[in-house]
Length: 505
Image (cartoon, rainbow, N blue to C red):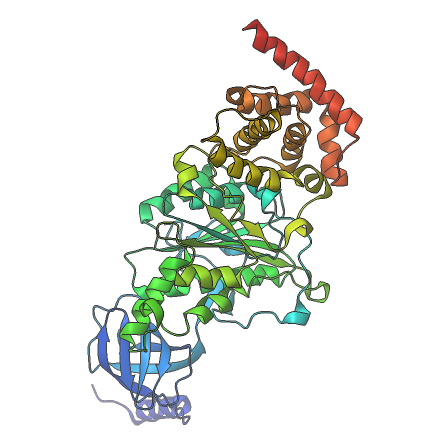
């Protein structure tokens, strides 16, 4: 079949119309080394720090070391099929992650991709992973409490919205349980929670997500998971990704709680990366900028000024200590960056005092500013009482005949320790805490047997809820203590009944 001249000319015309004269210039380099989540490449002379680069197999990396002859790149994903001699090209984009309301209720990896099997996340917004923290004039002081629902924290080491409170302790002393209870307590508190799991066993994270789901907490929570089997760059990035997701809400005037569980594993991953990138090691083989690693992350938590919408991001970073040594390198670094720390004591934990909060070592540098007036009044002397009790207790072991004042102090101390115990996944609303601690500090528990304290507490709350609910209402609405006479009357009326049932047994 002969091709007609008109067809040929029509085809040529079509080709000429589609012909693009613009030149596309790409800066392409060559991979010279690859291994352990890190690649080195030559030929990327103009690459930026933190810029995304793309390998020939479609995997992305992030430029870290900018040297005169080559660029050190951390690989974001699998690196098994990247070879020496492969091409790598610049993208001109800084590392970004998807953010927004669509992520709430989902479990994502350190790149913001879903890993919960619930389909893709359709977001139209992204934010850079590394952002400069708000400056001095963009912030305001912390004034609003963040209720954790844990008596020992809300009374002794209160946390305010916009604060950075370190949770520190040995492994298996209940750090994650504290975080989960705090997350559960944020229900109906106008709070969005981001839980960043760094190097946690996947089975553990799964169990925590299930707990949150059953208790209805996933309705306001995003989980970012970087498991122990993932390459070190993912563990290093995860906290920054969580912070970027939180900032999206904070700059829109909302309140965010972000939990970094835990930063010791992030520091270890960063050490691994740095050593492979041939950065000079410092103390404990960590690189010289390991302080900056955590300070630029934790400074992003803030209470914003009213001009910027008054949003807040509260950070709860976790650090795992070895044999209670808070003076090691990473713990001291993070203690100096944060606004206080909650220290969990292994001895107390194994003695059955849970949460095992050491009142002597724990501190909140925001303090009473982050408490409602009612709590401030009832918890004023609690810390001193506990500290003197601990001291007396160690002495009392040696002394047999103690005077009555010392015995009374020891008895009050034992009841204080007992009242501050709390079961798992049972956070307590602040109004309930206030009434219980009021009963303790005003001596209503002094003649109750230590074994009955927990029962006394539960039944007192149930009684006030049923017969004097206006007391709870007053605390919630005024943030102050109700009339003392009304409180005393309610506790005395309950106690009369409680004692009766005790003697009847």
